Length: 375
Image (cartoon, rainbow, N blue to C red; front, side):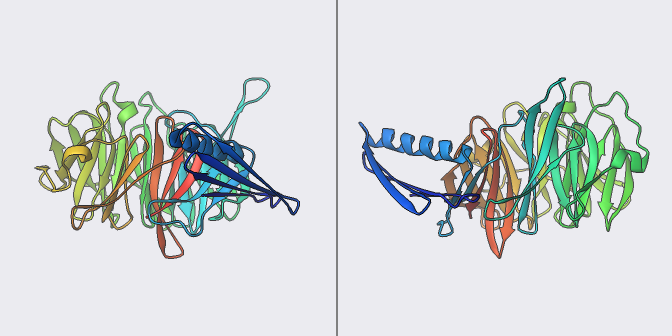
């Protein structure tokens, strides 16, 4: 059953696939209209249901399922298509700020937006970005830290104001066009144009400089530990640096044959999980010794992923391959949940989010959808 509502008009659409029958109930202006259509197979019926749902989402309807079971979608909202790799979003106190590609205007200018949603899927605000292409977005205390095509901006949700961090810190651009933003709790960090900064208690502090390998910029990534005390930097093939996030001291330099990472994250036990850029292979490393680890869960289908994210406490891991999500309980090493994601063409971005005490996997897909799945 798919229950959709147009939040502007109040119109509703209920879809139900029963065997080879697709039943549709439309409620407009207080009038109810019911239809049924029979298809040649159950598979065709399911496909028609998904197609009808997607057409409705694009017309402004929102899928809401307050009674979603674990692994089911509680929300689908159509945001619009994006660029490959630019699927940024951030959660902030039960609300979500999602990047939206606005498209080209007359004269060739590109207008992109930050869409503010509440947990019901209602659009509360749409703010024009000062620069297109949002590669990363993270929450840091009361503000958002955004990577807008290699320029770093702060965004204050209360005032709607953007601050160019490069101007604030007097950072000069150079030929090393790399950038990344990460966050953990109230702490955030960014690295761009060869410099690393941490945002803590409303102020920035420098952690030093870095230099990338030639051609490694596209796979550049950073991560903060769950307590915000350490920062991992991957900017060279087969090398990761672990820094003290308070003073920039290099705590460890890990070298191996793990290739180029395009995503890294700390787990609760202090280990570091990385995703190799080209093959999507997962590598787990001891952040202190650099030793390669083989946790019990890192076997078979769990050795590769297109996308991954870890919960705020570092105890749950989401591994996504195309449209299949697996949630792993890292404390026990067991598979907690497996379910399918909707409206994915090739890739998505995902994050664990907590709303009113319940945990969800928030997903922004390249087909233009923002969704919440109950965990």
